[in-house]
Image (cartoon, rainbow over all chains, first blue to last red; front, top):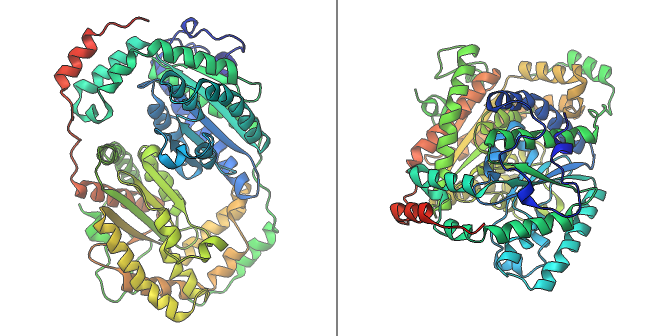
Length: 281
Length: 281
């Protein structure tokens, strides 16, 4: 079963209201079997990631970049913990993009994004990304309309460049319903251990829901390309969201088709040396 | 049971030959119960780490820095995967220090170390560290003797500064026996999937074993302080090594004694706002 094929947007016009936020495309089971399936994926993901890492250490140039976008509470952090947490943290580079700093604003919007790219052999994860510069920036008028227009093409050109350098991009929009967001905000309010995750502005932001959805639709229309396709991940069910992103990561790693690096030394000779050595301890 | 107390070096002269590499100080059980104990620690560690992260997001200034040192195959990477892998990767900053680059060599040895410090709220992990500059540097003569001498005091002053800024340091020497290292190197040679981890130089390095042990002893003597104590972790048994480091991390996080941040908004009022809102979707 290919999650990528099930979740990839078809290209052309995007109408997010036609995507169910509580669906489970590509998976027939429920929460229990989905959770089990994710746990089972863990070992495979860990091996695939280690092979990518080994490849990088041996001079290979491939890397993977997982881009997570979504409304507040859609679970970018949770996906990271549950999915990316399955592989060796040493091989992962996570960047959480916040509102740009003064230094970042003094550069082109792609400057800080470029600085956060994973090195060869690594899995990079962007929690928010270059897309905030056409999403929040559009909805909140943080940049002039013609600058926003320019950015879609700039992003496409930049992504094409990364792909040519050996990076596989996985672009995910975690698609949550406003009702589910409300439930999750209430849960945060009702649990003192989650109060730090809440800000009164989260409720104000909900008034901008339609504008944000429209900004997502435009971004998905303008930056969905053959080499860097967008996926809409139904995210009302956490277990499905995690499973889906894990599968996309697996498919991307499998697609690299990497073998373990071959020894550049004579294995038998090194074995003999080690067996025969005399140490004076 | 306090692992910290069991593993902390007493101060004063250090004779590493008096430390068993296959011991399990502070833990009475074997591999099976040790592995179970580590899994059980996972949830507690994850919560403690999240509390630290929340504290950082709320303006707190505390952080934790785990320094892992040890001979090749002592399991710095494995500890990271098994121990640090138990907590949310978003809250962790891992740095693997390699031989310094030209840019790094153009600065004081602590320059790159300072750049890698965890921000408030984060758990930083150093896979190798400032100590390479008094270990490898001493054994291989990579710096003049009086420069090496200067570095012990420089490290102590630097560590004191980090502690005053709110960072808790956990310094671990993963203590492996040369026999166990030989077994692990043979395992790497005998498994084609591990060949990328092996280099013929690893066998040459074994001839320097006594010099490295002596360099560790001197480093432990000169840089063991009340606020930044050294721990010698018997590392021949992987399960014990992982459990011990996890416990040290737990003790450090518990020692911070952090509470969940208190809401700076009226929870009941926000709850009402959210319940009563009317969205035009």
